[in-house]
Amino acid sequence: MKSKLILTYAMVAISLCLFACAPATKQVSIEVSCDDFMKLQHISKEAEVLVDGSLTVTLCSNPTTGFVWSESAQISDQTVLQQVDHKFISPVSEPPPPPGTPGQEVWTFKALKEGTSIISMEYSRPWEGGEKGEWTFVLTVTVK
Image (cartoon, rainbow, N blue to C red; front, side, top):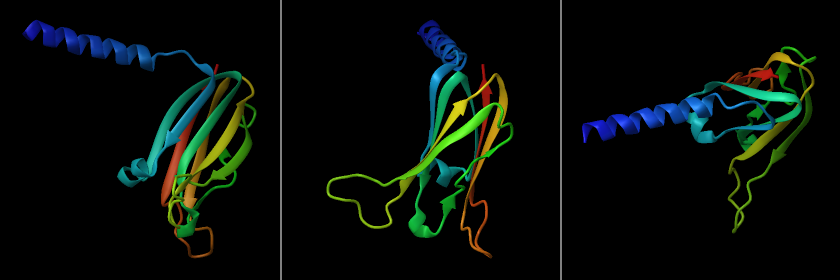
């Protein structure tokens, strides 16, 4: 019984390592839900994408609260990554969701050349005196 348990743990550890060590792909998607931000207001992640590939970042958003994500992401090295799109996607359900239901903001980036770049975004109330950096998202991207 004990050896089966050890074998199971070993297989899980190997599987996680193989998943974590997976090679970069042409299309990478990162999504962070409202529940994720409720647990941890400042989230950092890492991703790998191939040159000429695309990266999609989807973050929870509810503009009815006055909070919005940065329209343009802060990109540390714009020779490595370029933002090509940003849009808000309303929630869809049957029946239609009640007013105030959160949706998602989606950014699309193109990987231009090999290197590393950091994408930063901030969820704030943009007016003077409004709360700044209520939520933050930082993504370190390695382009291979």
